[in-house]
Every structure is written in structure tokens, then in C-alpha cells.
Image (cartoon, rainbow, N blue to C red):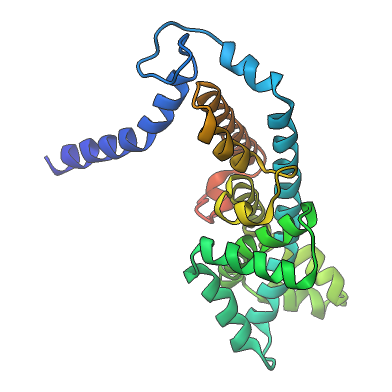
Length: 265
């Protein structure tokens, strides 16, 4: 009986999570000029509308480019900070950990306002570079935490054995340490990419009318037009995330990514 109730509860939770996505996908196929569910008729017209609007395509390119850069930088900085915090005692180590931890508690709207004022004081105009800096404030703390979690389960005896056999510190890092935390690195890069690509709150404060990420473009579009083009874009973003997850599963494995792979045991 308990197993049946548990299964039913899990199904309800799954339906609750999937229902908004299913409604969005179905609404993007409606033949009406307004968003409705269930859809009235089936058409792909609204997907054609998305690709017919160059502003959406340019915003997608900007979001994807900044997200890729944020993923790469976050992984590298996360690895460096994670190794430093995990293995060394240095002045300011506690302050660094506190800063990285406090980033989780600060609301994103507060971060957006603070970054806007800081960029203004520094004389930095809105650009893909300032947008990248803003997103790194969001993504680097998570990358550091994931790397620290990966390092916590690392057996250093292999590193010591490699060093004892004459390997240089760089070779020990490249052939022993880096492969051991590969899953955490890929996970941090993947998380940074999704966080950057989907960010709206912070981006609202650091973009301009000529430089808008895709979430900001959708937000501004919905203030004046709420037609099924919006749900078509939402469906494409969901599809984009699914493809990314499939690629991660194919080449890395989601279970191995989060340390749940049991094949090696």
C-alpha cells in the first residue's frame, strides 16, 4: 500500500512539473491569433513567425554566446577557487568563502541594481562583456560549490603516487586531478550555461534597447503583444534545454555527472 501511494504521489508531482511545459507546447500550435488552451486547430505558423523576426534571432545569438562564455569562465574560475579553498590555507580564505556563500542569499534584483550602479560608476557602457560580468556573479559561486563537492570525494593517494613516481605538478594535475573532477567541471559549466541563458532579472538592468538577451526580448514583447509567438519561443527554449541534456547524457552521463554512477563499484 505504501509503495502504491508513493508511486501515485510521484506521478502527481511529475504531472505538476510537466503540465506547464505541456500547456506551453500545446498553446504554440493553436491556429488562433491569441494564446489559448486547449489549442483551436493545429498550425506551425507561430514558429515561422519566430524565425521571421530578426530581433529574436539576434537576441538568441547574444544569449547563447554569453552563456557559452559564462560556462567556460565559470568552470575555469570555479576549478581554481575550489582547489585553492580546498587545499590551501591563505589570508582571506574565510572572506572568499563568505563572499561566495553570500551570493546565494542576495536576491537577483538586488544584484541587478548593484551591478547597474557599479557599471555606471566605472564608466562601463552596456555590452556583451558587461552582461558576461553580470552573469558570472550568478554562476561562479555555484561552480565553486560543485567543484568543492567533487574535490571532497577525491582520493589524494593517486596524486601522491604520481608525484612519487616523478611526475611534475602539472602532469599530476592534468592526468590525475582534472579527470577526477571532470564530472563536477562539466556540471558547473552546464549549470552556468542554463543559468546565464535563462536569466531575466539581472539582465534587465544591464541591457539596452539595442542589446537584449532572449528572455528580456520575450519580456518586452509580452508587454505589447501576447500572441502564440511567445509560447512558440518558450517551446523552442525547452527543446534547446532538452537537446543539451541529451548531449550531456550521451557523452558524459547524467548519473556520472552528479556522482551517482555505480558502475565503478
